[in-house]
Amino acid sequence: MQGKNSFFYVFLVLWGLLTSPGLLAQSSLLEEISRAESATFSLTALSKQQLPTDTARGFFIGANGLALTSASLLRSADSLVVSDHRNKNLALDRVIAIHPYANLALVRLSGYRNRDDGFLTPERRPYNPWGEVLHISPRDDQQNSSRVSRITQMLQVFELGRSALLPLQAGYGERCAPLLNESGHFIGISYRLHTNAQWVLLPVYLLGDKNWQNVDQQWAAFRKRSDRLQLCDPNCCEGLILQAMEKWSESARAFSTALRIQSAHPRIQAWRALSRCHYGNTLGAQEDLILSSQDPSSAAMAAYSQSQLLLLDGQSAKAQELLLTTLGSDDNLAEGFLLLGQIQQSSKEIRKAYASFSHALELDSLLAMAWYERGRLSMQYASDPQVALSDLETAARLNPFLPGIYTLIGSIHFKRNDYLKAIGDFDRALRIHPADDHALMQRGMARFNTGLTEGACNDWSEAGRLGNTQAFRLISRHCNNHRNRTF
Image (cartoon, rainbow, N blue to C red):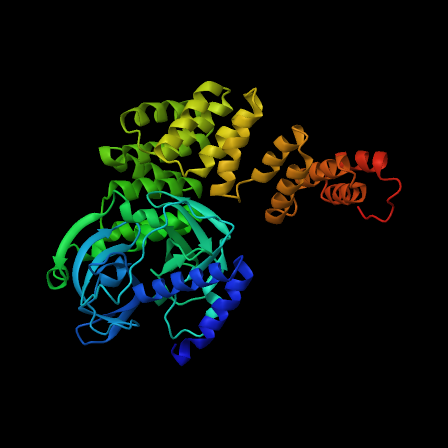
């Protein structure tokens, strides 16, 4: 073990003791982290004058030198230098493919040694949003505490899918590093927004995504391509993530920058239309939609954006008609069917809404909001509560930050007289949203039914302080012997 890494390994041993059930699990975790470190390296872009212009991480995903790195690193580099790896013979050989929406590049490095150089295999199961995330930083980084973090928000990003926000403290040059879960499995790729230095977990299943553009050129040939700037532009990725964060004006600016580099791109115009309509630029949104709706490849996204504009104007019937017409010819947009189901649900077309949510899930089984909406619909109309419970529990596993998700699950357990499970659900709800007065009210009733009167009165007292007037009725009826409360 090198001296400069000793603190890191001591830290990991302590972290393993805290998060693993035993020494065997601790040892396995260290082995997985060691494997990830051996697969990871840094790439530095150099100008023609051999001056560094940008740095990013990269990591091997195959035993033949196949690796992943940031596409924007390649956009203006004259040459690239590989560092921070025990194998000193590595060099960029070929650019295999570019993902223009995720700002990722698939490359091949020469000098790869099968015996000594590790590679990472993506975790097949969806990652757990409650778990810890480990960011594989450069080996000489002594700020090890910044490597371990927890997800603070889940995002559903167009073309990128189920992503998440991380409170990492790391430099821009550490983007495109592998992210591991608390078991040491490879679950994501790190991305850092230029706009606000926010770190994002991009999902590993992007490696098998349909949007990769084949390149397969030697580096010397790739750097002479006339479209290199367009292929390696990070602004699309930036705009899509900001849009999912509902930062509408910032995302529109990112899309505008992207359109200056690749003009009249219909899909980018459809995305910008959505952002523009949400921050009130109706005329700009309509201009984008006129151009984007004419291209069949962006028709579904244009219809989605147009429907949002109609909904903001109170024209839900027209929005529904537009989605039905367009999604019938291009039914690959899961978010489109989710929106259609939400409109149908508000119009009390319950069976149609259920079918739309179900079709959205057929297209994207990781779309948490579709599970959530179908579960809420089943809570209201299904005779068997297990149908709703199953959907809502799936939604919670995918995104525990959905509005009131654990309160809804707890309500079902409460109605089935399973008070201990209900209390656990309400505990989770309140860890995420401490001011959820509905969770406090129902946890109070569940506690009261299990004989925990003092805890119930404390919950109702807090709910009353938050403005729930029904709490005072319960307090006056059941809490006369528990006087030391504030409202």
